[in-house]
Amino acid sequence: AFVIFGIAREAGVFADEQSKFLLTVTSLSMACTPFLAKLGSFISGRLQSQIDDQLTLRPVNWTQELATKVEHARVLVCGYGTVGSLITELLDTKFIPWVAFDINARVVTEARAKDLPVFFGDLPSLTSRAVGGRDQELLGSNKVAVITTSSESLAIYMVQRLRRAYPNLTVVARAKSASSAATIKKLGAVPIMPEMIQDSKLTNLPVGLSVLRALDIPQEDAETLVDKIRRSYRKEAQDEEAADKDDVASKEGP
Image (cartoon, rainbow, N blue to C red; front, top):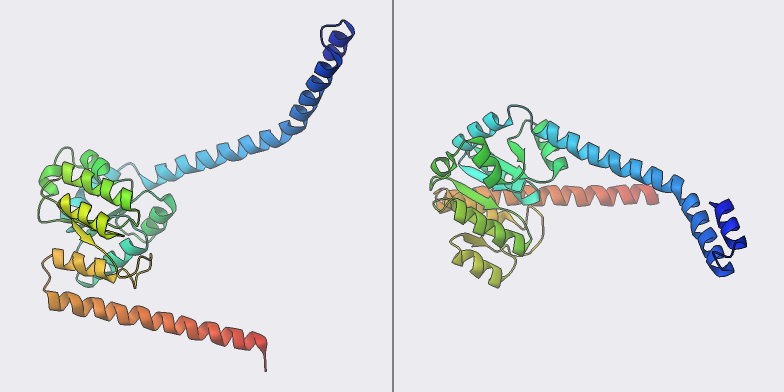
């Protein structure tokens, strides 16, 4: 390229300024080539890793497994993050079967490593594929779907999609504001507004309480269970705080 540019300049094809510009661009592109090659290799590896993760998360018999879990579950948890795991913890204490869905590959991988019924993807599309058109039959009024996302727009979208796909399904959804709660209620779902909008188990216990009530568990029993969990979380937080203080004191010395 340098030789050709030099010949072109001598022949008057390029002016001196044009020739200098082209030489600069060529030099920069040659200098960036090794870096771009490594970047391309890195991106390719990450994409392949994600594909491999999805193949791992959906084994050959995943449709049969999901169909069985959905058929026997009372609660369908949309999002297995902090709030989703809190809800399933409450359900486990009452031996209530559940199945969860999440689009975070890491969350699903960790859950399935513990042999938990958590599936990669969203509820409507996965379920309709897994049960071969029996989703309307299986997802009736005897089941409860819980939307755990903290995003108002996503929660409303998911409520709309679930109500449209399964009109008889009871839907409970988190709401961050009075306006989003009103919209969720208008769509036919049960909105839950935690006292504090934080993604912690302690502040989202009202969501768990609402799920228990939606399952027709007596108010007193549900409140007793939630209060027991609340005391457990607070004790854990106090123990962690005390341990941190002891750690700081030991590092500071006498």
